[in-house]
Image (cartoon, rainbow over all chains, first blue to last red; front, top):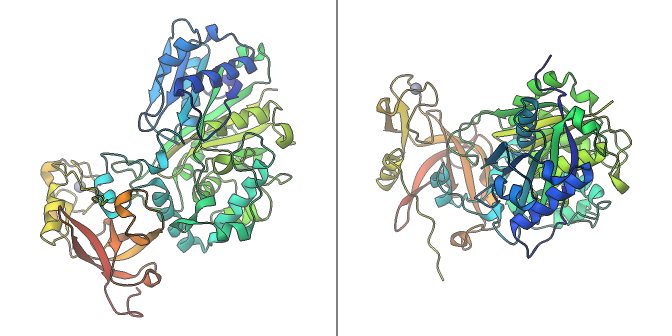
Length: 385
Length: 143
Ligand SMILES: [Zn+2]
């Protein structure tokens, strides 16, 4: 039997509201989301014995500090992971490994950030790595990295800017149903075309919306989760892939195929470990810091054919009522950029029947991915039966 | 207020690259063990793992073809506000490695995938940066 698959579950998920200026400390946001996850699960915070978190440019707070402010006693597993959007599913996997191996019983995973009023990742200059070769050129921000990949995607697939637009439009339909989303007004093709170019081929709606906020989930064993308040979202698989890396996550100079991001490299082991395939997925919560990243992630996971993500979205398959509801919170594009942790919480809520106005009709199998280009992670969640 | 373009802070691995640009020469790492060129400069060959003693920054021809590009309309750093819009290229050098450079010498609508380009050197007060211009007249620069 696989030592990992199906042994652990997410028992509860929690989030703060998303704002442009929280006026609160990052630790305060983290605490609110963590307590919300515990409360949803019906677990006393004092029973938490592990905390895992990730950060970018030191914009978060230490895992152990969260333990202190929720009244957790001694911690037997902690991790602070200094990576960005590629982290969320990987952090859940780490918590699950800690639980499966007996290092901890109840592990909180969180991401908290004043991503709009504090450190703005999209606009922040990184130091070190390969930045010395990009920054003097004015190649200074992650949207530009994404645009470089998107242009090559268009060259190789024949996709147009309207294909990226179709993705943004489809996700906005979900955001209209999500009170937490920061962009809820409908987006039309005309509106998309008229919006401000940022890094061509990308316009503003192709890019995530930075917010202040936090999201957290509680990972425990499947057995313990069964005794808690909500339907367990069983962690049936997890995988990480790094491909074509050189000096930092913004450098794609040694990446061979801009049509196949990390997700195309982890899909094999991910589905094998789950004993499932992309055809089994009822809904998908897929990392989308940019529309172009969403396309690569959908295609890499096998959810649609290479080069077809825009058409797939335009045909309504990912929208409410479609055959593969995708980013049912509106995604990072429209709900807001909690760095993919809000993509995990949404997957959990949908599986627990807490999707509200946007609840998907069938919720037995979900895939969640985290990351955009060189590296990233994914998990498969299945409803406990 | 003028904000200076962020100057590179060369490492021991990259200093010969920047010194080369200052002399208007494109110097790219070459591995004497596996015979491959690579970029960016690193203290080990990513093709075969050979150590830095086996890697030499060697002058490349400076010619290559456009792999991808973006056109910046938003300056994410104040130093580039006066430059927008500007284009940055992914260029596959004829020796193999991919490098980035500004696009100069023609309107952006000239840029096409596979277009032949050649290196040019932009001298700024503190350092010299890499750029590329079309290698041939319009209509004659496709593969
Ligand atoms: Zn070598």
